[in-house]
Amino acid sequence: MVKAKVKGYVVERKVRKIFEKYGWYVVKAGGSLGIVDLVCLKDGKCLLVQVKSTKNKVLYYKDYDKETFSGFDFWVVVDFAYKGLKIIKPKEKISLEDGKNLEEFLKSFSQN
Image (cartoon, rainbow, N blue to C red; front, side, top):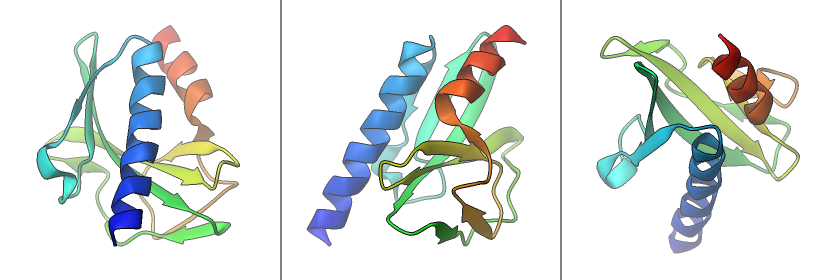
C-alpha cells in the first residue's frame, strides 16, 4: 500500500510539472482520497484532474460517468507505465490508444 501511494505521488507530481510548464497554476486536492487529485487553473479556465497509472494497456475506471464535477470540466490523466501520459474524458475502459498525449493537449488548449 505504501508503495502504491509513493507511485501515485510521483505520477501526480509529474503531471503537475507538465501543467505548470504550460502556464497552469496547479493545486493538489487535499488528501487526494476523493475523485479529484489536481485542480488546474489558467486564463479563467478550471480543469479538475484525476491521475491514474497502470502497467497494463487498459485501465478500468470506476468514475467513468462524470464528465463534469461541480460544474467544472473533469479529466483523467493516465500514465501507461512510462509509455505516455494520456488525457481523456472519463470512460469505463481507457486504453493507450484513447485520448491525447498530455503535452499535445496542453499545447492545443493554449492555442484556443
